[in-house]
Structure formats: structure tokens, C-alpha cells
Length: 181
Length: 444
Image (cartoon, rainbow over all chains, first blue to last red):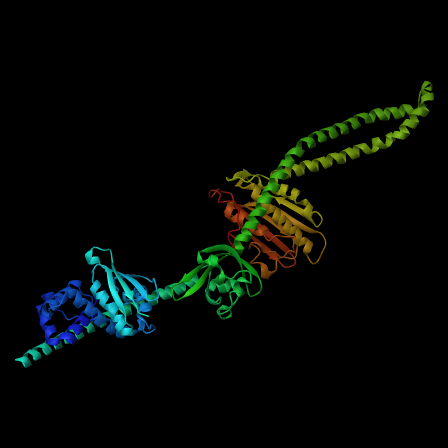
């Protein structure tokens, strides 16, 4: 996992619960996870999960809720940092359709060892989009939060329902999006 | 207590921030170094590719999707006979003509291989073997054409065809000569018999004339009838002219026999191995075969030294000698001072070589073309009189097939002598059959 995600997670906790709370969570993590994360660095996924685990325990919320909330928090910030990928869009739907073909491709150019998930989609109707998330990390809650974040960023209301989940044995996680016209 | 807790949090965050800065600096240094090395490698690769692009012997032409020429290499400029500035940015039609537009040809999507013509600045059309394909990097779409000049190959193909025709004609000539030989033999025998018969009849007729001039009385009544028959047959005239006529017929038959023998010798089949051959006899056969070419303009001075048998491809050497004799005849025909000339043919052994000298007393070879006369297809003769292959083939036969040499001495308005030197020793197995594979300047 890239360091930028760790930094955003820290920001998410600090902004929501304060710096002292984050420090308390951080110092309770395994020693190997207590490193200074930098954006371009690559770190084990286990570090992220360890921090999330400690945070959910400390904050008393479920992991999936925490990840979803973090995704929603992270997207607008990622969009600001990498505005080149979003500036030409006015709506989440056309943007989401470019995620795998363009954004992940560009991510791999900048971070040679990045392992972005596989995102595919079907476009059954103008107000709908069906997305499939496949990743060995199985962070579908984070993905759902990121998708919801696109609605916040573009200021377009969207509803998202997860119809299949790899954590429950499906090959991939399926999300059905609806954009009220 | 709270302040102490806040201070501790700030201190920890500050420490981590400082560590992050240090890590980022180290990463930046590493990335900078990697970037420097990568750009150095890229620069080196770019230089190599540019040099390769420039030096590759095929013409490389890059056409943009707009149909304009984007890049060409040195070989392209050589083929087109123009400078880079004249071709870059120009329309593809300038190179390929109106009949084919690579940037618009769907077949180019897969690699297209075809023969096409390239249009030079001077208006010539150069045949090329062309390979065209699309270069698509996602951001950059163009058609790359690689063209190999087929001019030389086309010439070689024509030459090979010509050589095959010559070989066929040679075989045909040898076959005809063989077939003519038998009837010539019995015609010669019959004419010789007639000559002998006339000679045998001559004393009979002489005695008859004696008796006719003083006939016995009992024959007197038949004399008038005999005189009429004799006058009608013009027997006296026949006995006077027949020996000469039959003699001329015999001479003619001797000539035909010689020509047939020379044709058979000249059209000696091409063999892979050299065989011992009589060079003097070969030259005499050649002069017989080529007589029609020189008899009207030149006499021949023969000075044939004593030669051992030489291991050679005599059929191919015959072709060399004939070419040199015909060239000599043409030189005499073309000379400015007119009149009959002389073709000198001599042979001798010099050291380890047989030297065959074939000269003329024409105008000599101008200095300006001396370096080119052995080049394939070089000729100063008018259309239809010379293919420009004679001396090139001669060079190939003598140098490549026999390990010998061919050169010449020429003096303005006095003439030229070609010297063919064939080693007496048998230096190496024969090479491949004759071909015009090179353009030599030095011919030994």
C-alpha cells in the first residue's frame, strides 16, 4: 500500500478524533507499523490493517464502517492532489468509468510496484452504473467509501448498494450505483 | 497534566514529521540519481538508434497520419537524390507518387510487403522492396516504410536471364553443329569423289578429241551428230570449269567444317571442374566464330606461342576472347582515321601464367572512362550494339573463376591491348558460375 493512504488515514483520524487520539492509536500498533509513512513509499498492507484495527477498537466502530468512512474522506483529498484526473469531469459516472483504464494505469507509471485493484463496469442505463472490484486485499468497504466520495466531490447525490462481496465468497465485489436524474 | 499530554503528542508528531522529511530527501536523492542514470541511458540509446537509423542500408521513411514525411534516413536521401530539407514535411506522394498513399492504406495496419516505385527528384523511378507498418505508441501514430533498392537485383536478374539465353543458344549451336557434321562429311566425300572422277575422265576426253580430229572413215557419218551433242553439252567448257568449281566447293566445305568444329569447340559445355584445354586452339575457334564481326574492318595478326594445356573453363574463356575480339573490331570500326585495321592476337607463357593479348589499332580508351569499363552495364556503344556486360563478364570469368587478371594498355589514336593472364597452376576449386556480383576498380 502506498504511503499516501497511510497519511490520509492519519489525517482522517486526526480530523475526526484529534491528534492525541491518533497518537494513542499509533503507539498501540505493533512496533513495525510505527514508522514515519511518506507518500511515495510502499508499505505492507498489514500495517494499514493494524492501524485500522487499533483505531476501530479505540474508537468503538466497526472496521467496515471505518474503512468506508475513510474512503469517503480520502477521495476529495486525492482528487485535489491529483486534479489532472478529475478536472475534465462534471459528474462521478464518466469519471468512475476511467478509474481502471486511466487512473490505475497512471498510478502504475508513477509507482512501479503499485498493485491497484481491478475495476470493471457495466453501463446499463444513463442513471446507473454497475462496478466490480477485484483485489487480493479485499478492501471493498474502502472502495465503497471512495465511490461515495466522488459524489461528495462532484456534488452529485448517488446511492450505492453492494450486491456481491468477495469476503462472502464471491469472485468479486459488485456495486450497483444509482444517480438520481 | 493535559498540557503535558498535548506537548508529548506534538513532540511525537514533530519527530515523525522530521523523520518523514529526512526519508523524502533520501528518496528525492535516489530518484534524482535514478532519473539521471535513466536519462543518460536514454540519451545513449537515442544516439545509437539515431546512428542506426542513419546508417542502415535500407531507406527508412516515416509518414505521419497527416500523410506528411516526418523523418528519413541517409539512404532515403541517396535514393531520392535530394536533401533532408527538400523531403521533410512534404507530401507522401512526392516519394511514392499518386498511386499509393501509405498513411491511408489499411493494409499497412498489418505489415505490408510489396514491390513499389520510389520517385526521385530527377524523375526516375527506383524499384524497391517495401515493408510498411504502423507505429502506434498511443499518443503518436505514423507509418514506417523500409525500402530496399531493387535496381541492382533487377539488373542481375536481367543478366541472369541473358546468361541463360546465351547458354541455350550455345547448346542449340552445339547441337546444330553436331547434326550438320554428318551431311557435311558425306557431301565432302562426294565432292572429293567428283573431283577425282573428273580428273580420271580428263584423259579419256583428251583421247576422244584426238580421235575426233582424225576420225576413221567409217565414223564420218556419225561425226556431225557427235559435234551437235558435244556442242549442246559444252563438254570442253565443263572439263575446263568443273575442276575449279569442285575445288571451290571443297574449299567451301572446308570452311563449313571449320566453322562447325569451331562452333562445337566454342560452345563447350560449362562444367563445374576445370579441364585441360588448348588455349591457342580456343582462340582460333573464336576467330572463326567471330569472323563475321571483324572481317569487314580488320585483318588478324596471329602470333601464338607454344602453350601447355591449361586447366580452365574453356567455354567461359571462349566467351571472354570473343568479347575482346568484337570490342577490338568495334574500336577499329569507330576510329577516326578510317580504313582497315588490324586485330593482333598473341599468346605466350610468362612465368607461371599464360598471357593472352588481344589488341586493336583503334582510337584507344579515353582517360575519363578507363576506371569504369569493367563495371557492369557500362557501355559507350549505341543502343543495341553493346549491353555493357562483356568486360564485366570477362573480368568475372578471368578473376573470379580462374584466379587470373585482366588489364589493358591504351594509347590515344594508336589502340588498346587487353591482357588476359591465366595461372598455369590449378590454385583452387572453381567458384560459383559467373555473376556480376561486384563493381571492381582493380581487376586482379
